[in-house]
Length: 54
Image 1: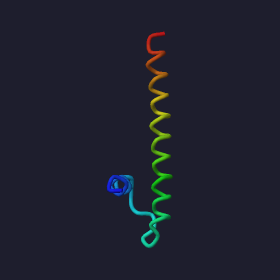
Image 2: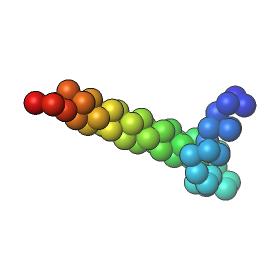
Image 3: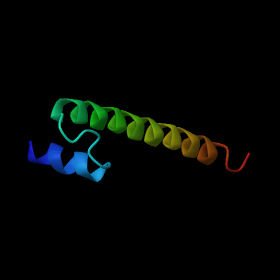
Image 4: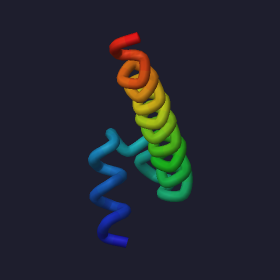
């Protein structure tokens, strides 16, 4: 649970002060968005590398 608390603080401000469950859901959504950005950027970079010297 300690890792989750650190991760939630690292990705941004607590979404709801009085509702931990809603704040956890917001942190999960932010995490999914972060990983989708990372995946998209990885695919773009891989495509650029693949077609570097065509």
